[in-house]
Image (cartoon, rainbow, N blue to C red; front, top):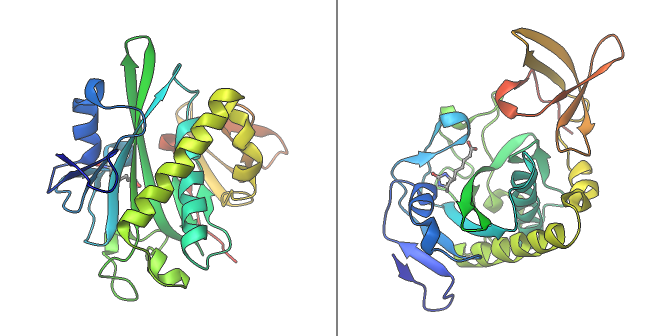
Length: 258
Ligand code: BTN
């Protein structure tokens, strides 16, 4: 693990099983704003205990963020989703990156990035590891993406497909870090809900058909927005509303996109 000559906060690894695992293992020694990056991740981890395979050209990096205290539920994932959205909009011709609550970024109904947040108390503070897998310019761009990376039959998408000159990895990492630190600063100074308006305009589950496992049964409804407590609201057929606190219990039935 060696610091990058241009960016002292960037620790580059020739290869590693998972940048999130390394960051979690070394967390006490990693400062706020540090980024671990490798171009060869051999055992990447995804959400819900899934494995995460990434081709060359997919950014695999983990950012260390120190907070005064743990954030409620999925707030940090959504903060990271916004950082990805703003970074990609700056570096491509994409007008709006959508967020699939709480931790995926989509464009045109195709997955662009996934986020895995983990953390634990460190002394009297709380440190988080924000793992981001972002399709920058993978070999499958405009070609055959791995079948298990499809979502509702749609292949993933990359920044390179969004128009403009494909950015350099370092440019993407630097921009992601800036946006991440900026929104973390904002939510620490105010309440995390300060990011809700930006999130809500990117919510790609709004109006989508969803199934939720609740108390041992499955309820169906339509995405009805992100609530003040960070949970996803679901409008039920009888007009009532229920909330979903974790994506583990949630299934998207189909994804209709404009
Ligand atoms: C998902 O979509 O399931 C989340 C994927 C998160 C992948 C990133 S790649 C960098 C970091 N290291 C990991 O092992 N996982 C995250």
